[in-house]
Length: 196
Ligand code: SF4
Image (cartoon, rainbow, N blue to C red; front, side, top):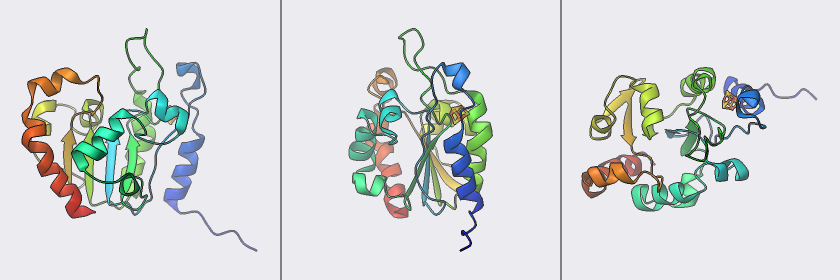
């Protein structure tokens, strides 16, 4: 019996999961993580998996994810992990290790060029959400991050919104910009609910 042909998207995902490009850079075995189907309605792009996400292989399966789902989007885990609703990816697809115990290393630049550019061409989404500065810088390299958060954008002709990273370490930005949680996040939540 002939095996069904893989779609371009399926081929990309298989290659991505097999990628070990940064093994020497990390000094450990990379574990690429991303979730969702080519028909997902929302592409969410963040920085890179945390060590917990690396260990479980499940995106945003950590404190940041709980804040994102429960406080900001106000959706269930079931909806968040529905592969036809969210395509969850990042500019770096693997946990990049820690730098001198100060925090995680930045995502390798090669990763977004190698994978993210192709992912966003193949997923037929209706909306983008960029989580954190690394994702915002990839799509809007010269823009001020805070201005990006408080305005609406487009990527490939589709609506795009920028939100700060929900990490509990990201304390200062929230102190300086209480208006995000007071008003902006509810506007973005409505866009998310409209799409799903
Ligand atoms: S970070 Fe990206 S380029 Fe590096 S090994 Fe992981 S998937 Fe490959």
